[in-house]
Length: 158
Image 1: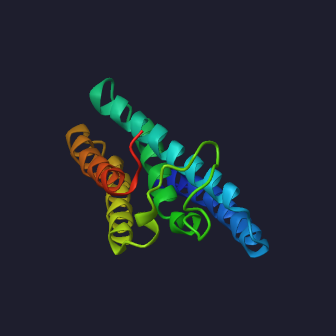
Image 2 (image 1 turned 90 degrees about the horizontal axis):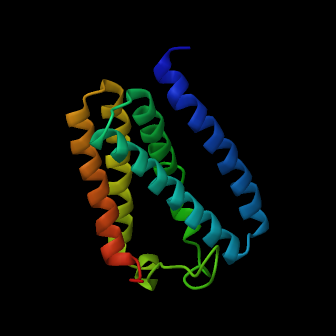
């Protein structure tokens, strides 16, 4: 198995198994609190992996670490996070109170923001394969801009 397939296949297989499990649970109707926990957890994993990429482009660059982190971000971006914004999750507590503004559930800009995030996450995974630190840093900036845009529009301020 070549390196590209290994780096993409493992996260995709794991996320596929998680998605299948989540789908089975969804058919039984998970409680809103559980959906909020999953949503909060997914974004924490995205944030951690974004930090890993940033640490590499700002310091000692490790191509393999950047590829792993970028592939994880892309896999989560493509995992169907929108399903975690189900009715009943507008308010409530997962690991902590949800910080999602009610508008994220009704504003069509939220879907556009999610599509932009997916696009930039997939591009980051692609660019990471090349190992060009300048290109990765530029693409990371584009990805982070999609995060900031969504946070500015759809996340309650602390």
